[in-house]
Length: 138
Image (tube, rainbow, N blue to C red; front, side, top):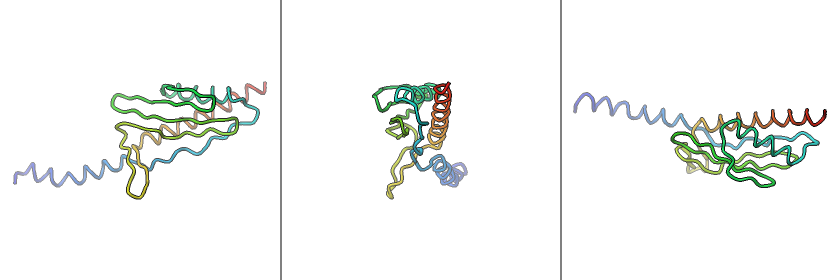
């Protein structure tokens, strides 16, 4: 066996192991509480502003939710953001090329980047709600 083949055989398990570390459990973000006194229109504006600000395309709007897609050079992620005047809930819908899988034990897994995107989006929505709430009280 040639030296290069032997090296490849030795490195293959390491390569597969490092690819597995690019996944995390897919856990939808916890609901975001809406400050009292905001209307559904204001909540929708906070959500839409955060989505657009993070590069998500709004693909459908309903009175109580927004469907949105993030498209990169070789991936897509689709989410649904449900909301009312009490809380906002972000849910995973679909993706391509983000290492999404459901394991035998039912655990959903996805690329680590997706989980970061959800944290940033949740933080931005919360910040937008606070800004709109502060402006509504003026």
